Image 1 (tube, rainbow, N blue to C red):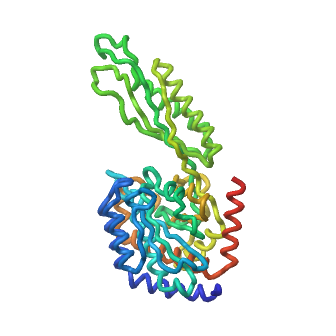
Image 2: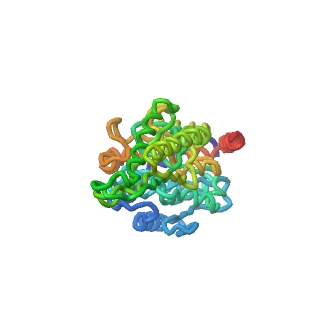
Image 3: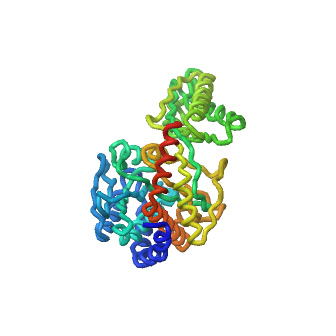
Length: 398
């Protein structure tokens, strides 16, 4: 199929999406109203798989040992190309769908519905892959390790945000569990006989804060105290914090992580507490750029009347399990504007914004752009070759 023919499909893709639009909105609203924690997204996963089956997709459930993971397939296994639209559907109680995963899922679902009538014409196999626990253990790590994406030519999902950006910037990240061990004592009668583990954690946070002016502009360090003692009349002998370290790449991450660990070790040494830092087994990696895919989406997004901005190299980045997956398969993860710059993600306000007219406009435009980009990819062998070439180059340089 020629590039011209793929372009001619654009109004037909819109018409197909409009025909199924009530189903797309209903999926978004259901996930928004049923906020489920990572790996517990039973209702949301069931709703997506039931609706995909109703629209003619063959669905596999419980992939790679994850009850809420799924893969829905439409089209022939012998098709010239395979594209996967990725769904996320976990939330962040009590902050709701404050990352807009209902919008992520609905845009991917809508793109798949809009393209399925043209799958045979495009010689395209469509997949919708449900990846649980983006905010938790990272379902894409597990599904990637299990080979679920091995036969995919490119995978894609959008994120709702403050801007239209065809190539979003993401950060490498690692979670650290920081434990302080002290000694209990009566906090009034003989505090001098205790060692205050909570003070050690607080000293560590203070020391970490002093690092910020001297860190790279791309680095982020932040965390919470999860446990700080049991009784106020007892000197806390145990305290625990979780800190997330983010950076532009794994090399920068390693350097910043070393400095953060040292800050906590020195803070605890100052009060006499013992410090144990346990890094998470996996690091999130930054999503590998693929300019050929980003260009496809940029063109498609402009065709629906949006004007994507250049990638912001300093602010507005996040971390995702899609970064590691982008080392296995070419991955497209653009941002589509849903809110003003005054509405921060991971807030109650963003949860509220993830339903209603602005969210629906974001889903509609994103679904069309995803579908149009996939149609262009499927119709042009030279584009497919360029995407593969850029992917090989990026993974070889790593």
